[in-house]
Image 1: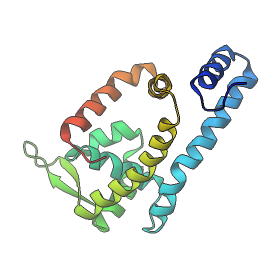
Image 2: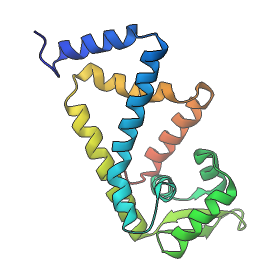
Image 3: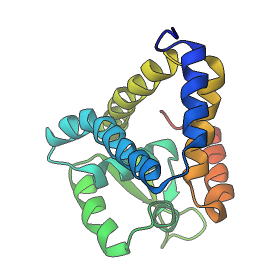
Length: 179
């Protein structure tokens, strides 16, 4: 008998998943993704609700915190939302003093976004909730599966966007934005 959670069980499950090619198997993966996403955002949703914020606020705050000095144009590009959608959410974050907009150094018409101390704290608290879930799951996986999880998530990104995402991750890391 294969012990659940063991490396052998993981390899067996991975082999079965790799062999899954039917529409029903794909539909099951879609459903698993929905359930995983529901639970992944659930803790953050509860914390955001205390501030009257939602998931859109979370995304803006996350990326502004990870890349302080991010331009509005770059944020629109990352989020792939309309300027109108961003303006509503950004105004709420600015008015509540979670984000501040500063003029650009070269082009004073440009607005650079920075988290305020309270915005950075909320972003860190939200990231801590979600990071804890990832760490708990990753700790239960064999080492080979940890890399496979990252590869899977990266493969879910449209192929023509992967280099842009790599560049974003490198910028966030270089900027030293808090997790």
